[in-house]
Length: 314
Image 1 (cartoon, rainbow, N blue to C red):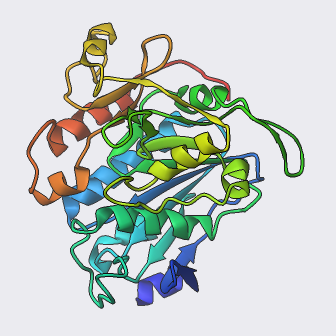
Image 2 (image 1 turned 90 degrees about the horizontal axis):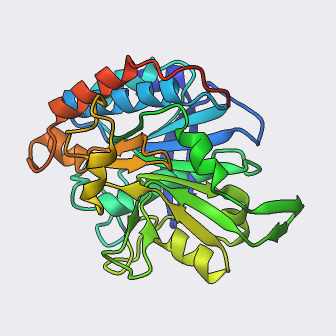
Image 3 (image 1 turned 120 degrees about the vertical axis):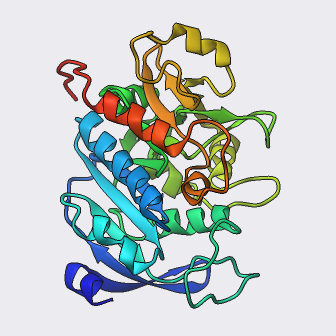
């Protein structure tokens, strides 16, 4: 832990009745109106490191708006943390306690998070909520195997929110969350997947919401959508090729994402603004082969980084 102790400040954080030992590296601090972007990572090998690195590169390349990027690493082996120790301008929470659910008990060494991934992901997000500025207006959750791929992605999602904050604690009902994908597999009304989801954080806090799953009915983050709807707020979802594969025909033939078998979110002008590999941690470990490979994902993302989309003002 010597490298972490030198690069970050130790802090104990209680989540779900358990004390987590974390090291926090605060490298960028902005006013509350700047978006807070949170990515939870688990780095078991070099492939996972490459996936996370591409996510970070794409966020920084395609997010002109003022933002704080937070990476919450969930107890990855220390030998894989170098990419985060040396990452400039990115805030990092190094969680050194295994995020195992209560029924599993205490796990001293890094466990098999593939067995309790939903809970571990929720713990990572909840750790971030206990560290970021509580006055922040916008919170964005992302998976490490997802990435923005157009400079208007965040402005587009933000433009869909219609909650009008008229004073402290006073809100007019409106759309309080916008995501890149709506899933109906667990709920007929649909829930926004947290792989790429923007929420009005002040509404989130006022309603006392959390990211914890309630399996098998609700996966990690699903109850955010449920809670918002129950309180009278609306949600917005992009069109996505996962559920509407015919949308692929609307994608520019020159786009690096035209033929790659991944989830692609489109804006109202049929531009691909966000992509998701899917099962990225499992693919990095070699346990899943369906869909695009890690190499195909990284190749398309590298091509996309080099495209000149023109100047975009935040």
